[in-house]
Amino acid sequence: MENKILEVKNLFVDYGKYNILKNINFSMAYGDYIGILGPNGAGKSTLIKALLNLVESSGYINFDIDKKEVGYLPQLQENKNKLFPATVGEIVATGLVGKKKFPKFIKNTDKVEVLSVLKKLGIEDLYNKRIGDISGGQTQRVLLCRALVAKPKLLILDEPTSALDPQVRDSFYKLLKELNEKENLSIIFISHDIATIGRYASKMLYLDKELVFFGTNQEFCDSKKMTEYFGHVSQHQICWRHGHEHN
Image 1 (cartoon, one colour):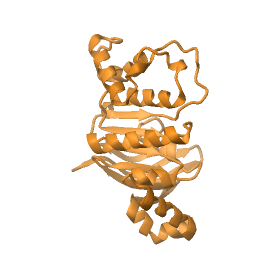
Image 2 (tube, one colour):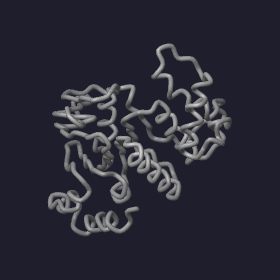
Image 3 (tube, helix red, strand yellow):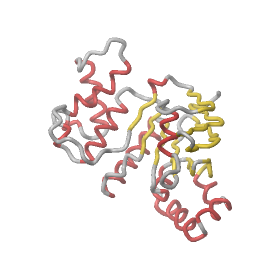
Image 4 (cartoon, helix red, strand yellow):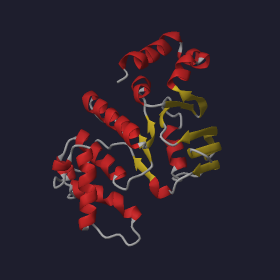
């Protein structure tokens, strides 16, 4: 499977008699940044759970890397427990547990790795803060640090910006793009915001229980099928943003 970090063929997911995903086929190259899009109930989170083997599925899913090299960032819960006693350093260090044969909590070497990733994301000053005492944007960066501390080759994110305000959300998008470009981190990112994710992702996967579209942003903008799907005005607005707001 040359240059492919992930390949999916003929993937089906059923919940009882309900078909959630039907015949999904796509592959991902090393260094790809794929935005997964689609309406509510389209099966976006189910696709991620199938990739992570969190739900039963049929078909072919093959990673060219060890599962321990896959980082996962779930949706941010807005109603976090402010009394939860763990510190930021302790939360991030739990991301190292999967790498250890006989894990021990926060050794000196762990602290170095934790501080290194916190510094990379500009929040090393939060190391000793309780997780319940920091903002939503800071919490999301901490959880991203937890996903990154084990140095994954593929990072999967399930609508990580849905609870963030626009300014913090934009900063988060830029941070991920930097990790993708500078460190060749492969990324799969579920988003509702098709116009914004198109500024950052290299490829777009549009899902509505079946695979509606998969390709580059330019191919998306040139696609007659997607123009018919969204309507000319909406498609023009989406692609105008891609062309004029890209950083």
